[in-house]
Image (cartoon, rainbow, N blue to C red; front, side):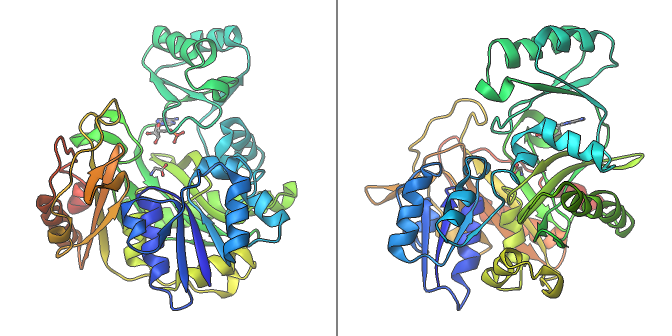
Length: 421
Ligand code: AMP
Ligand code: GLY
């Protein structure tokens, strides 16, 4: 079967890497892809939101399955369009993707179905939002309702900062139409944990636990990023907490779909805060996490094509997804300055040497005149497995130590928390 993967990040390289191992795959395509995906198949220079051309390509090329990485392609309705043409595709429809593309939609669903989440208010009028902030306890979290590349969440320490955040989102429209509405919620204290679950509309299959490192600097300091590294399993998700996540988040999610007459097929990735009162949902993502997918793919034993088809065909209840017992750690190497401004075009060396220790997933990379160069904020996801956290970390950082490009920045403490656990 020929497969098309949509996207160009470390997540998509990791998906391609895993798909490439399937004996069922006869051809692999990635739109638009990066230097890593190019080594596994063919990169197709079509933008992720040019849905009509992507579908045309899938038709012309006889693609048997398309796998969507990024949220914006899902929110733009890529799945609906492919389905209307009879093309097989993995991911939720535009309506399903609203759990991620509208925070207020997700909050209302959670409220309706008793899923634990922060208390909130939502506003389309900035004066009303400002008034609400004057009588709340601080810190307070102000969120643009729509997709904002993970940057639409601001934590306000006092009413002045809250007023500024609302002004930036609703008046300056820093995130465009994503700021037509704001969600304002109570600040939750605790440790974050990523949950991934395949959902086929009726049943779900929970992945092993994982933890992302969103802040740019060691010790969870600095600005929020797309993710500077991740590891799996994460000891924070104890068996007792996992039971709570199933009973309080995933069971009611699937029940809620049925009660509301909604369809959701794809990957559900709730971001959780583990608070003293138990897990609370910060947000729902409707796609594979990045970087989490990179360490996950190294642990997935099942054939990924079989897994994705079980979701599409609603057969998850009878399909055991198998994982290795390894620990897997991914350290993201980013361009100097990320998540702020950064330069591109820096020559990258040492990737081959690094691959003696682990698997180097590419994100912002491309080939220029026979040289591998940087082309984005997150450049590489250097990923390794081991029998325990210490072994996996050592290999991942040994691999990182082989790689050079000007300005390279990475965190030294990925998965360090799990060493203590
Ligand atoms: P979100 O996109 O909603 O997950 O928010 C991005 C990040 O902001 C999360 O990963 C958290 O670190 C932080 N965050 C969001 N909502 C809250 C909250 N209610 N309390 C504390 N931190 C939050
Ligand atoms: N790991 C963060 C994200 O995928 O949104």
